[in-house]
Length: 353
Ligand SMILES: O=C(O)CCC(=O)C(=O)O
Ligand SMILES: [Fe+2]
Image 1 (cartoon, rainbow, N blue to C red):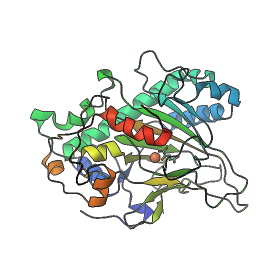
Image 2: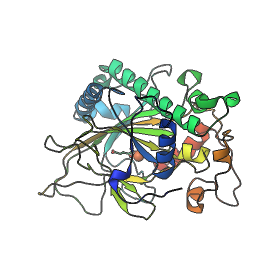
Image 3: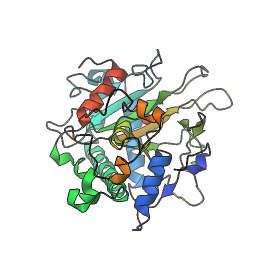
């Protein structure tokens, strides 16, 4: 398998709009080599919907704290565990960091849950847009998962290309899926030791990431602060649009989460990433907005036994296997999707159960 170097232009841009027998292999190659890929966005998710979501997000985060605080994460008002508002410095994505990240976030569960998640008035007023955005994100995740299952050559007698998508069917039960709005406030001058989101890999199966250029003068090519860790240990910036001359809209960034990496015994790579300050010449960083759709399988999906010889015969690298809890001595632990998520949330929020 090829390994990747630090060139940001390496992350491939894949066009899923034209049916091609190559697409599954392109997606599998990117997912197993970089853990990141771009999906060309020619109306896969309309740019207008992305822009409208960013407007809603801005209005919400700029509202008084009294509007947000009642919906604190894990609270009953916000609908329980991992739902609701995360205030400044309340979360450490990197367990080794004492101080939380200088950002705010709002987590929304899938729209199929009953009763629906209570939302603060500003978000509630845009519930239809949010629901439609979540639905479009989930459909894109299932398309990508279908390509991955096809490339892994899962036999049709076992579910074939629908193997993963069936296990992400939101009509079959609740899941850890979260649509997260993120806001990184502006800074007066950065503290060089501090970063905006600590180094981490995502928890779920796939993440879709949308980033807003931080200032009106910032070009789409701009790096915007997101960096991924290459196998050689260097940080490589991820541009919003890797090719503005050929792509009129920024492509949708997709990355593999720990759960899918664990499930595929490390064949698919969950790559560590972080967000750093991107100061202007005055040493200030503008405010920054992003939105992440963290896609998870249904809670009782069992994370074992993918009927694919590519997965079964994959040896993997020791370091990756240790990180995923597939290390020697432990045996191959069988977890459900919910158990896998709960294990990770305990680390991020210090939750007890
Ligand atoms: O804000 C970003 O660009 C990335 C955020 C991220 O990686 C996360 O929330 O998992
Ligand atoms: Fe992330």
